Length: 404
Image (cartoon, rainbow, N blue to C red; front, top):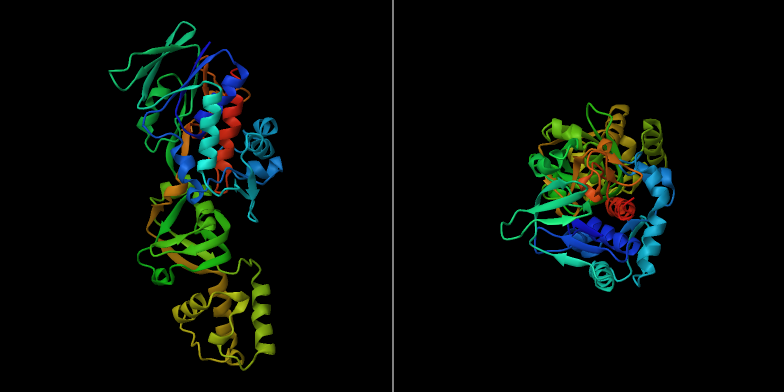
């Protein structure tokens, strides 16, 4: 049996290894359009490779996927985060789980993951051909002919093909799969930071708020977690999650919208009011600048006071009811305008791709074209940050590699 893998990324390598282990006598070939293999693995997590997440509850795992989570539930029972950790560690790659549940190689270097894959490919005698982009697949009875973008490469015929080409930023990049009868979900960016050139808060670049709550006005989209202030606007896990949850809606808004920032992640305003009243009782003679509520970073606290015309020299017991209410508003309902997105290059992910309605998720086989399978981000599956996107690649690649 001849098995062709289109795409030399995370899902491509994982499905190729799975296929060869399931069919040891098969000829398995990975075709990569560029001359770089596992490029996203290399740069993921700042070069450390956030290989999966420590989340072990299947329902919680599904919740991390704005697109595809519910559909993957049965798949995660077959191969989940626990299996991923066992897979790598059994192949000599020890892993560590951080306090935020992100899982990295103990070496803190993505090269450990790349070396593992390359060793497995060598051990299993899987062939790799770079600079070999596939432009179309032609059905020839029960066989599949791969046609290449380079005229110098002759068409190749395979019994089974697994498509692992990753996300396509443009719909045209998926035309060749649509031509085979697959429904395509329009691709739009996911996991991006917010570009806010007209907001003075950018002067606080470098400040991290450990647990903020951000929501998009006029929608139900919200996310919480660490927020990073950058020289261009807002980034960090909370913003990236928000962009993932709202990928399609924010695209429809042309990336121009208003956000509300709850700096203290407390949705009950009475609790915030009571906290401030306690400060007035216990520290009445402290000036505002010298006592920061909820442990806010000093530069942020002073910025907020200035933004809302509250003197930092005012004593806490000099605050009247009106000023107290203003402080509550500052802390829980601060408003900013987003003018555009700014790609978070290390974690760039596309929302969209081959519709899951076109796939038999029990096998990852195409419903419209027998013997073609799919794995990874080419499918309409994407997740928030934290190793979940790689987990989807491992899960779908493992199942596709069974070639059932």
